[in-house]
Length: 219
Ligand SMILES: [Cu+2]
Image (cartoon, rainbow, N blue to C red; front, side, top):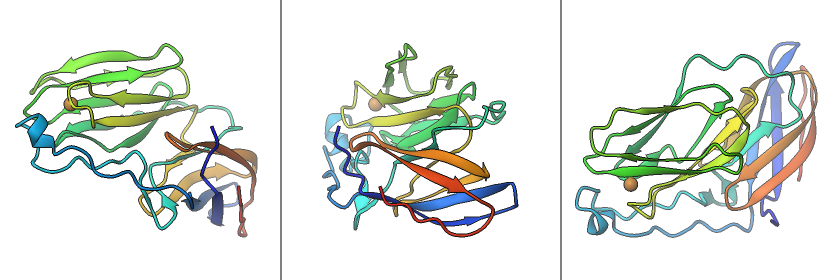
């Protein structure tokens, strides 16, 4: 896929001598925000009377949100974080739209709505599942064993979709609505940084992380 992500700019490094925070902005100059969709309550009276916001391409002024930025040539994987990550279904949308977990880390999937959702997770590596969740269902906890990006959708509400990134370790971040991201605590060294977006594809860039200075990267 021809990625529209035009540049990844690492604007600053800071931190202790052995590790640094890698921060920057993901841009996609030619990407267009997707229009809002169906009025949700028309499809399901238990959903809000608002148009479903389309978070699949969240871009404003060329700044791209919901992109995963991660260190691809990673240091050895560490232990999975004890604290899990929550993915809620609330107001008939996934909240948040994009989440990341480490291999072995719990992903708690909730349904806070007064309606039924089903979580249909599509995996290229055999980690998919399809679970119906009626209102009041206990949370489902999932753990993944292989790194990949897994797309979630709800078959009841066609506008509901989400993407879950599974990573070797915690050296990843998700860009916010202004395209900004911070990967914390990257050990000094040379790496390949990957930027992955569900519609716009993936790009890579080499980065050298040192304990001081500024690195600019254009993809
Ligand atoms: Cu749903």
